[in-house]
Length: 140
Image 1 (tube, rainbow, N blue to C red):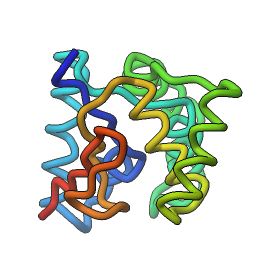
Image 2: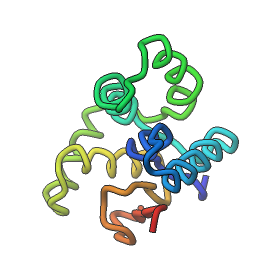
Image 3: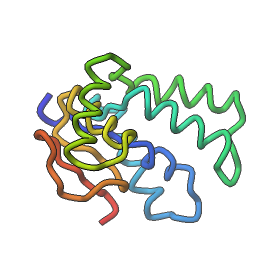
């Protein structure tokens, strides 16, 4: 359990980004490793965010059927954190102490709840530690 890490939505999005080949390659490796080892996890929030951007904001949006296949084969096998009153309270507490947005704070809370050592993301401050979880930007 000590090698667990949380994978943020942007990592999944980059696997479909043909304009950023370096980020795409790194992201694909992270997700493949997560699926192969069960060390990487996500939350319901990542599932929601990814499906929203994949079906609406990608240069070539995923078709609904393709989104369902990705959901079944990639997202659901990694999803371990679901909504609870405690999770929302943690998110609000983190928001008040870090000044991150509510949604970013929920990602941090989910990683803590999942007993992760790090969050793999491009969106937060690389190297910052919050309640035992270190933020890691894999593209630096």
